[in-house]
Image (cartoon, rainbow, N blue to C red; front, side, top):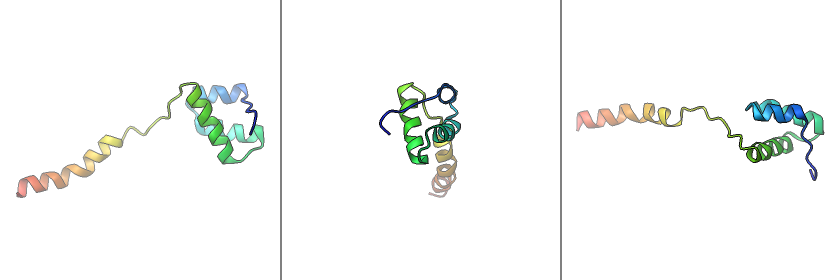
Length: 77
């Protein structure tokens, strides 16, 4: 895709962190592949300073997984 066209609705979705919906709409509006649409939306989100939302469970999940074996080791050692 040489020139990328973003409709106002797509830009609004990006700014509201609704990236999946933005990809779907962009794909429809520009008649492109899902991969191309995702790349275009990711580029624009990056350009606009819209960060990808994470689940927020990265460190907490690690602690939940690692704590029981570590406690068992410490208590039994």
